[in-house]
Length: 133
Image (cartoon, rainbow, N blue to C red; front, side, top):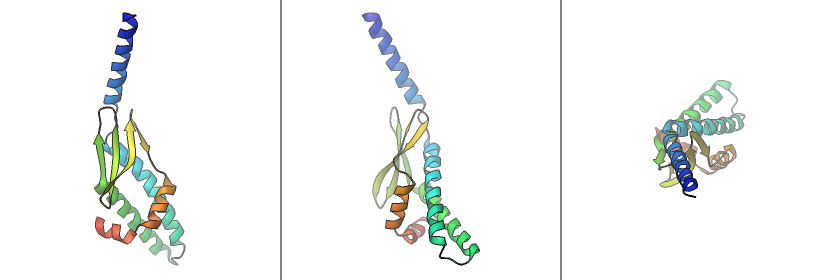
């Protein structure tokens, strides 16, 4: 019985050590968020851009929107380190919104492109652009 408890304790310690050592860093959270956010912004700009008659103007608008989204992520992403995991939080209008959880070298997002699209419909993109610049 004592051997079983000893083996169980060693296994638990090893698992705890692996969890503590394999937490992703801030860059992993940023990259995972950036990929999803930029896809959503590109899709939204494609949808909105159909009303713009000139291709060069559409391209510049898309570039500006992608740049604003990227800068917003850089400026407002916080990663809180916990013992066995970490969590990514975006600061939005004074609120801390959980957007990702990192464990064992992986980043799991708490939203998808549809959620970002709904958010973009509700927020004032021009206000965010002014805040970033």
